[in-house]
Length: 261
Image (cartoon, rainbow, N blue to C red; front, top):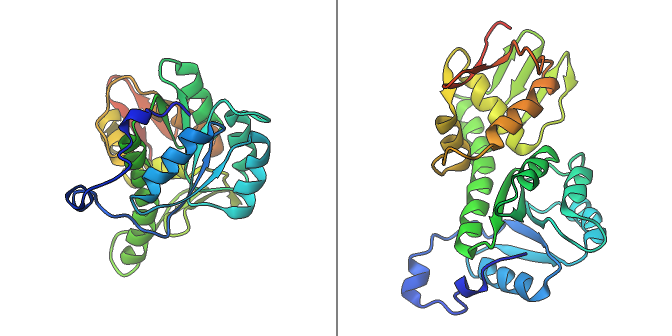
């Protein structure tokens, strides 16, 4: 996995635990990693912070485990015996809508782009500090939970839970979208981006705004995940990838979702 083993606090003092925000203990994480020692260290750290963790060491078994167990989130290494992480991510996406964090080589931009194109929600360069991994896991799971919670609250308020733009419908309560009454196959991260853009229709959103809203961290000016996801969403919602009418790129500014495309 390439995690930094030096960053693992094997024993926490009470003051250290008090300083760690507790998570929802029902969150179930599946780590797909063939290095048993690092996988066990990672599991120990995450379980020490309130998560329920299982480990799969063989890529060839990962698809069935993800489909059958339906964990809340998958941490997926790129290089695995039996089947690589990109192939696993691509194969499970039709059956698994939860977040997937792909672990990639820090300097390999191609790995990051391919991971996003296969349906990963986030990626972390190796070696990874366990606190960074924990923070990314929490951010992704909270984003899904907060979307569902805010949708329930909005049902009795003025804030819409369903948006319609001619033949395109986006429903936040169901976390689904339809084009011409046919369901659109979106990953969790793609839906979040589509809803963010659609709910801000008519207003240009900068990459900084989008990145902060979806990832919970500041934009470093280099990350290409937003651009990759927009390019994946466009054909799914019937937009022209070459000359988009619905999600427009505003040069040097960001993206604009057009109300009447």
